[in-house]
Image 1 (cartoon, rainbow, N blue to C red):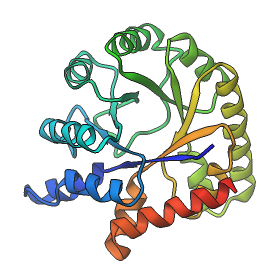
Image 2: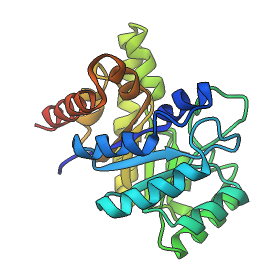
Image 3: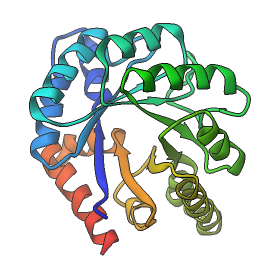
Length: 248
């Protein structure tokens, strides 16, 4: 099975917003990503709008429909975000934890503790034809709760594994990779499609991409950073090549 690549373009908007300008445009980054072989575009509309804006979602929704590529809207489990998702009806919505003070998403969604709210949001999105993914740790209880909440997809949080690799801690990295593998098997056995993402770079993508149950990786921050040096198209094409190589 070909492993799909979703490119997260949030941090193009971060650079734009640093100067309060109209450039660089996230929609232009999405166009480049699609041309470079991305299978979809991901964008996180945060409560504080620190990067992606409501106008960006309007434009990205139109672009992805025109280009025949799915838009994956990352969103918190709130009434505001549910209303926005229902208004735009993206191909997919990935429910993520969100705290205003965090720099980036820290860990997976606690589906066990937030079961009622997650289930209500999941059912409302699914009824509108939106594919629902839950961003979770590779934890048996969270994966089981995701299936019970009605999600069609789980996206396994790879951040801890990637951090361990970059920190030069092979033993911890091996344990965390095994946990991801076990989580992927469990999720697939429950009938969930399995995605993964967070913190993935060229050094970590191979081991993650080789997990056979995975259908999609979502990668953003590293690709936007690498684009400074080699260009976004080249960065995506290299990531795509490493993913395909791992699958062989």
